[in-house]
Length: 357
Image (cartoon, one colour):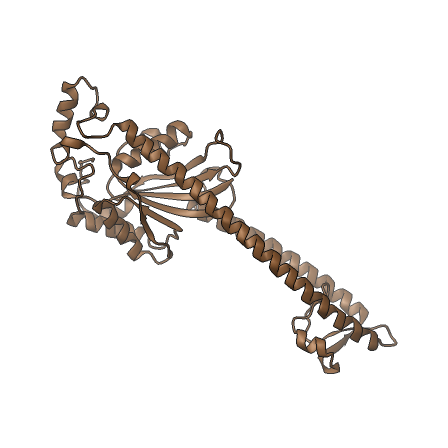
């Protein structure tokens, strides 16, 4: 399985949000409140390392994403835009109060305005399909990029190994010839000067030029029993270092995945990517709905917390586990670490806007 983290942020507040006006795909910029929210969420994510940052191309999302990119000190990836991350299109009702849409939905015998498709607008099914297509394409692109990187490293490693093997054979030949000339009567073992205990097992010298010359000043003499003891201690030290490195890698992996709190049974593997998405309330809701209803993602506090429109500049975080086997029947596994978190906004001292779209 390949893991990647997915952090989702809703854009900051607009004047339409504050006044309950439907904006849909009408390009409305952030208000002063929205700009401050963007600044605060940027501060919260300042030290988060992202490999990919993708935003809706509408101004309110774009401005929020740009604030995050400009403040972030741990990422160097470019900001990319994707039209599929836009808000639902509401056609003739964009720019009108949301109550008019609700009244029209009732007049057309719809229990909820979300079921009503206004002239020139999108259905919720179309928005849902947009969100799901984006997610699947993201998974596929990340796996493809990771596979290409792994293959490239493998090829480079193979070339390096062949080069090192050739150099090692040449160096060992020089050592062997010199040692045959310098054997002592008491059976001492002669090694190149400056070789540490960790080099004794491999007998590989880093300073190839001195070894190739084989000058007597470049070699020192060790008693056979001294070599055995140093080699034994060297192996023990190497084993301790390997164990410490393994534990450190596992701990770092868990912290990277969960932000320091592994509240669920998340696999102890390194993430291949860390993705930030900046989008809109309706699109985010449909994406989380897909996670919950199709991928069996459990939401902290119950799925109701995930199936509502999130607040402006709230943050949600997921870990996505994608099967390495190319089998359409195998779906990604999504683990929710946090949902619609807005602690970073609490100090603003304002009521959150009720305007949803």
